[in-house]
Amino acid sequence: YWAIQGLGQPIRFLLEYLGLKYTDKQYTKYEDWAKDKAELGFDFPNLPYLIVGDEKITESSAIIQYLPILANQPKLLGENEKDKVKLNTLAGVIGDIRSELGAISYGQYPDRAAFEARREKGFQDKILPKLQQLEKFLGDKEYLLGYITYIDFIFFYILDVLLQLDGSKFENLKGLKAYHERFRNIPAIKAYLDAGKMP
View 1 (cartoon, rainbow, N blue to C red):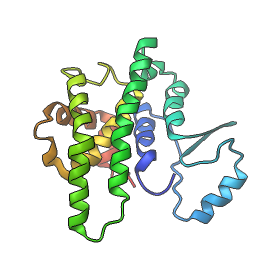
View 2 (view 1 turned 90 degrees about the vertical axis):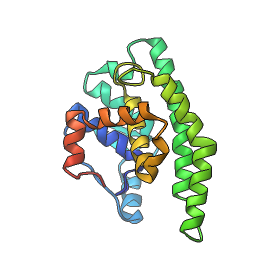
View 3 (view 1 turned 90 degrees about the horizontal axis):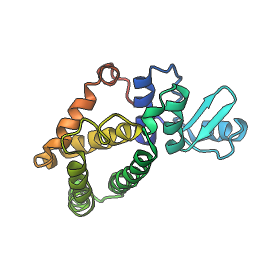
């Protein structure tokens, strides 16, 4: 992936959680990626990508769902068919938050005040309503479905970014703050974060 967090970070978290050994190749120059893009033989060249033996996978959603199969932990993909549908629903809801967060983060602003105004509007109009729904859905469960799944790795990262942007927005989202703290303290995740390995 690029030498940023972005779409690659939930995948990195899941790799750490699963204890899978991996090489985190990070591109800093487009020409390096262009060369690999032409030579590595992907069906659908894109970043991030995962190569495991003869398997060559692109698209972040495909990679994060492939890793539990690779690690023989299919429960991370949902215990049953109904839960798999719930995970697809959650992926859509969390994806809406991520899209708005991306629009805010990668927008062009004349000054800091303009950025902060756009961030406030985006949070109030689009992000907060989804977070409130997710807080209600989470309830008193430990994870979104009551047990950990690949969606939790995506959601944790989104919450982590939002909390860094403005933690005060979570004063009335105590369930999500507790969820974030609980996830952060999973031993493998805590060790990774404390080691300062994130791009």
